[in-house]
Length: 175
Image (cartoon, rainbow, N blue to C red; front, side, top):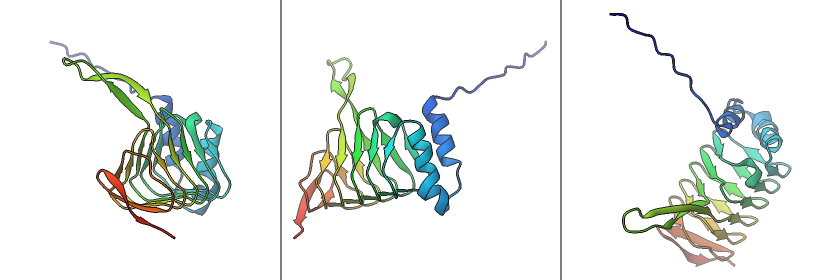
């Protein structure tokens, strides 16, 4: 009996290929400060000057990304940009942050996961988002706020606040 050799081909989406090009660059000053942003701009992202983008960053729709000047993005950031994600000037993002713009309508009893839709996310100027934070659809983080590590932000927050918890809430006001 002759066994046929089956060859399979891996098909990658456009986003996977772009992510490969952005993340294949080594981690050093030139890649982090110039090259990753240049590749993202080439594919449609609007990125300001002086940004520092570490590897591994994953973006699903580059044309929905707007990043201001002098923003720092640490390792392992995921931007699910089905909807627009706007990150202001002088924002610092820690490691392992998830931005999720897509969600689903509630379906009927037999299939609760209904049709997909998206809502924008906005991080205003001067914010610091610590490690391991999830930011959900339709959220705006007010200017000058800090989101503490491990928080799950599902509702918009006012400016100049310390935000913490799951679900996150404003726990302190900054002067």
